[in-house]
Length: 383
Figure 1 (spheres, rainbow, N blue to C red):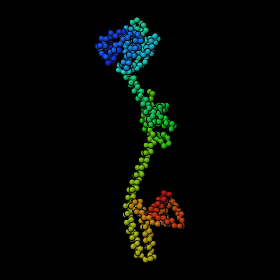
Figure 2: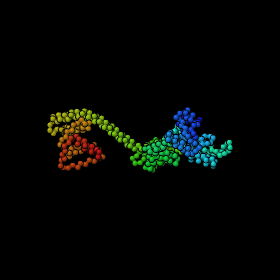
Figure 3: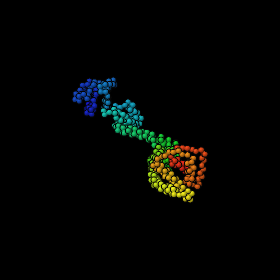
Figure 4: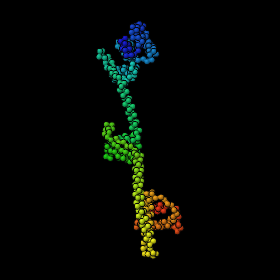
């Protein structure tokens, strides 16, 4: 009855057996529905089986805590295999330890059992010393730790970066990406040696044709000994993107420089063109006052021709600065090349020979003279 009262106080429902049921009627009346008394002989196996089946049918679950089978002290009901193991320990003087999941009033719990054969201090008969502890929390924490460890191992193994642990003998661990990097670059293991890649190293390494990796080395402990953790990240795409960005920035700067130079050239061309107009006008006025055959006439013609060529240069500068409108006209390309030959010789220098291969038949085109002269000049200089 004392056990029944304690279980009821803990919120359990109790089934008690009595030969005629009358002996426990007062207890049942006192605690109400929490205790149910059934008739049966607890020392009879058939009655016990029927009692258990009835309790399970009524309550849905049965936790057998204590039973009195005719012995003086209460005996905990345990798994049959464990009971057999206890008997073997007692008989053979062995020790036994096991973790068991048991059903309790608060749910399923894990208990650790340590069984050691001994003798009863009163009569010296064989007995067993059983040490039991609730290890449910430890089991839960262990399971969570194992799950976290497995998750972390999966993350490391499948990480996109190469992860390698290196000791004095060389790489002793590598994830999938690290193994691929070692296989793709046979000399990489040597490059990761302590002398070339000590702890604290941060630098680029070649992973293969067109592939660059960023290497970082940190000190670590591996299986109780000092080692180095090397992480290698493939930054090939990053380097290519950086190179493309640098090239784009260079082109933008070049465009800005050309734009500035064009504005400067346009300003100089306008000022210079004004001076040429004065020179050309003065030549024409001077020629009007001369008689035919005057010695100065050829000199004025040279001045006028030079001024015309200078005017052509100003037109090219204006075209370069995009301030000169194109004026297409019919041109004899062969004749234009002949006229430019002297200028080309001076531009190319004395160490470069200029040979003209021109057809006797005119080559007529429609184009802006200044633009064609600029094209021919560029072709000659680049060649």
